[in-house]
Image 1 (spheres, one colour):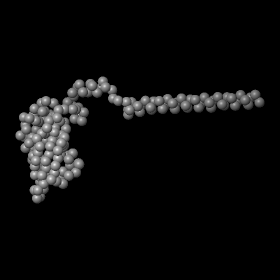
Image 2 (cartoon, rainbow, N blue to C red):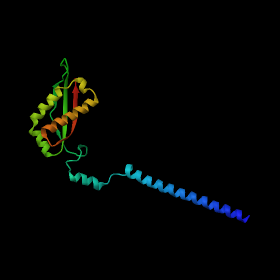
Image 3 (cartoon, rainbow, N blue to C red):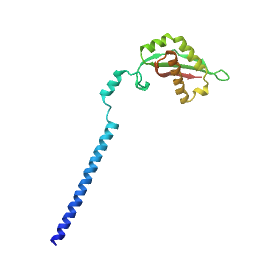
Length: 166
């Protein structure tokens, strides 16, 4: 009878020890997972690395991360290339440029810019500008044309501030 009690106590101690080991391992796993989730999704990015990226002014940095100066272009009013020729487009555009050199180039080549954008806009049709995708493509085309004129990727973004199609 004494031997039966020892065996039962021994079995209980082993199973109890196994339960504690499993609990400790699970808690450690949850702790590591929680820390990973916090650092990846909840915690704010380190301010030192953001300040270093801004201070570097790396020209190879993508345009989405750079902030520049906003320059307003004149409002464009053109006839659209529709068969009956009765539709027109009024477009107000502002351009975000990389630096003062690009801003000076916009002023210097103002006649070329107006000519290029008038030709581009007058080649569009009502159906070609009516969808959201077409407007996004128009912004990209304008940015590409302006970068061809002023060079060095000076235009970061194009903002449409006014658009009337009638």
